[in-house]
Image (cartoon, rainbow, N blue to C red):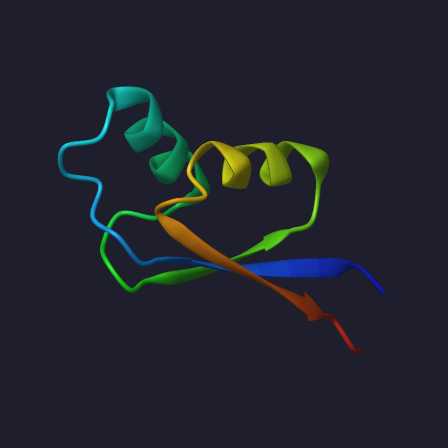
Length: 64
């Protein structure tokens, strides 16, 4: 079973540095209150840490 993360953009990227905007776009988050489901990898965890004040992340177990 692979772990997945539900990541939701809960705060606007307006007024934040371009680096933060690029991280959010890299994760596929472009609009407020949108949720994306991504694999739980160290790279994604690092991206979440960079913009932790803008997103909410929840672990989801993938039961097949």
